[in-house]
Structures are given as C-alpha cells and as structure tokens.
Amino acid sequence: MVGKICGTGSYVPPRVMDNDDLAKLVDTNDAWIRERTGIGKRHIAEEETTSFMAAQAALRAVEQSGIDPEEIELILLATSSSEMIFPCAACEVQKAIGAVNAAGYDLNAACTGFVLAFNTAQAYISAGIYKTVLVIGADSMSSLVDWTDRGTCILFGDGAGAALLRAEEGAPVYMAAHSDGEKGPALTGMSRHRKGWAEESDNESYIHMDGQAVFKFAVRKVPEIIEEVLEKAGTDLKEIDCFVLHQANCRIIEAVAKRLETDIGKFPMNLEEYANTSAATVPLLLDEMNRKGRLQRGQKLMLAGFGAGLTWAACLFEW
Ligand code: COA
Image (cartoon, rainbow, N blue to C red; front, side):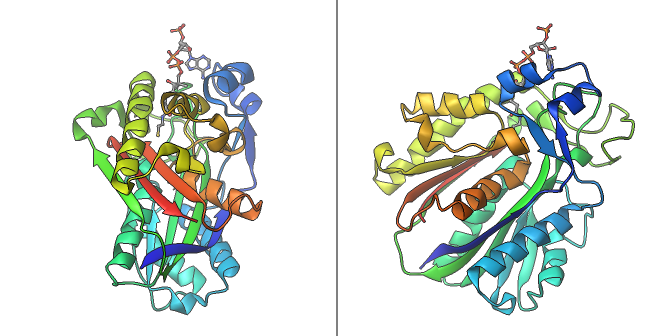
C-alpha cells in the first residue's frame, strides 16, 4: 500500500509585506531582493498562530478529499515555530478539524520538515499501521527572524500547507533523508525570546545564518539526494514530470536544475508571492498546483527539502 494524496489545502495570512515595505525597516531594496532570491513579497501573521494556519490548511485538504475527519488516524505536523512547546500543534489541529480518532504529533526538521513528515506517513502506510494520514507543514517565520538583520529577514514568510494521504494500491514510493549536525551552526534559530515582527530584537535570539554556506550546501546536496532516490527507484531523471523543491531561493532551484541538466520548467516556483515559509513551502506549492489543475494522476513527482540541522530529504511518488 502507498499513501495517495486525496486532498490538499493551504493557508497564508492576509497581511502582505512586499520588498518596499521591508526597505522601510532595513537597508535593502526591491531590486536586490528580487535579483538575489526571486522573492517579491511575503505574508505575515498578525493574530494567526502556527496551529491556526495549520488547521485552516488542514480543513481545506479534508474538504477537498471528501473524507470525514473522523476517519483520519494520524496527524503529522512539521513545524519549528509552534506558538506553544506543548500541547503540540498537531493536537490543536485535531481539535480544530474534529479528527477525534487521530493520533498526532509534531516533527521539527526546519525547512525539511514537510518532506520528512510525508516520508514518515508513507512508511506508516506501507507498514499497514495507518490508512488515512494528514501531513501538514506550517511555520510562522516572522516570529523567529530578527527584523533588523537584512541578511535573513528578507527571506522568510508565514503560511501552512497540508496533504491528506489515503492508503491505496499503487507504484512504490522511494525516499531518502540525511542530516549533518556538524554543520548545524550554519543556520540556527532560538525560541527563548520570541517576539512579533514589529518589536525590537535583542540580537542574541532569532535566526542566525551563514547564507553562502547554506546556499552551497543546498546546491550540492539537493541534486545528490535526487540522484540517490532515482537510483533506488531504478529510474531516470527524464522520467520525472515535476520537481517540487523547498522554496528558499530561486537561484538555488535554478542551480539544482542546471546541475541535473533538467529543464527549469519542471521546477515550479512560487516564492515571488510567499518567500520561504519553511516547512510550509512544499505543501503550499503542491496545493497551488493541484488547485490550478497542473497535476495529473500518474505523473511522477519528486519532492525535495533542505534546511537547518543541516537536514535534507527527498521523495519520489506518483500523483
Ligand atoms: N539588501 C541589500 N544588500 C544586502 C542584503 C540585503 N537584504 N543582504 C546582504 N546585503 C549585502 C551584503 O552586506 C554584501 O555587501 P558587501 O558586498 O558590501 O559586503 C552584499 O550584499 C553581498 O552579500 P552576500 O551575503 O554575499 O550575498 P549573497 O549573494 O550570498 O546573497 C543570500 C545572500 C542570503 C540571499 C544568499 O546567500 C542565500 O540565499 N543563501 C541561502 C539562504 C537560505 O536559503 N536559507 C534558508 C535555507 S532553508
């Protein structure tokens, strides 16, 4: 059995902050941000919490699937910015959507989180443990960034995406995942003194990043893990219809496509609108493509995530 996606959903807060708005906070400008990252704007949470956004995305996925929330057996929620340490955000989602029979827990692997949660769901389903699993990626990055640091605050946004998986007979799912804790200091985020985007930072907490180190890591490791999954599947790059990569920077995605000698048209992007929403980028993009009718049954999709840890993961499955 494999987990087939039978519904997707997403949510972003209505408040939009474009690059010109950011230029009022830090010494930056629209042209620089667009050229270096491909980002034009980001959605920023005000009242909305991570679990609220996750629940909205989940409700939309459940609604699209037509499945009764009571049939959901497990909720896996990837996040590194939940408003509470406990209860976990997955339990908040359970309550909000009426998934009374589901178990639920959160996974934290930063921007790689959704792909790892998706792989975990597939493992449970192929082992026959669960049949109906809700996988969510949700993050409020605006609560973690230092709004005085132009090297990081320009990159991130808030949002959530969800996919509901149902056990069916189908082509096997292939996956891989890696971590390199030695390189952890390249990208760190503290949760000790969380504040809203408009409040003053103390410079000791928040996200710290060696941007170039993270850039080089992603450009090297993402093609490697895609090749690794293809080898496991005994298939060729040319067989893949679509590569849904973590949306961190369009230059990273372009460099990955170039290294793989693959048409950039197979690498959809939406970071112009949403920026890097961490664990939410992959399901947000999946939902956008699904609702636009750009995904057909039988298409081969490769998901790939990368981020703090450092961590990276990939998954090949048929839509
Ligand atoms: N606006 C204007 N200038 C900026 C700037 C900003 N927002 N941020 C940095 N600069 C300046 C730097 O101070 C530097 O100036 P200098 O040459 O006078 O010293 C110059 O621009 C180049 O900085 P650099 O850090 O070398 O730029 P870059 O090309 O590496 O781009 C990132 C910076 C952050 C966009 C890029 O490294 C990146 O995207 N890395 C990956 C980060 C990421 O995706 N993280 C999340 C992974 S999950």
